[in-house]
Length: 128
Ligand code: CA
Image: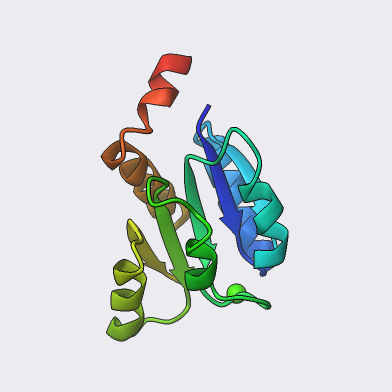
């Protein structure tokens, strides 16, 4: 099963993302801060993808991205809608960038697309 790390400090948004990813057949690991996410990143097997809120209470999502290997697709999530922030996110090596508010179905589709691009979506097919 594909495992996705979701780091978001707003509980209702994190719950909504987790619910939709689980509904799409993914395993979800949740953290409300970068500090809470770090031990989860150290776990084996690691996550197949990560959704990182940019504005976290301790570190920002860009900092947290540096602890995630380049082979793991990262999707940044933020309320910031300006082009400079999106460019920074993509330059940091993000697979994708989603601005709040967003439709849950689009988020799930973007996670699936990121997994396909990195060849990790196949794990889902093998499990079926
Ligand atoms: Ca936030």
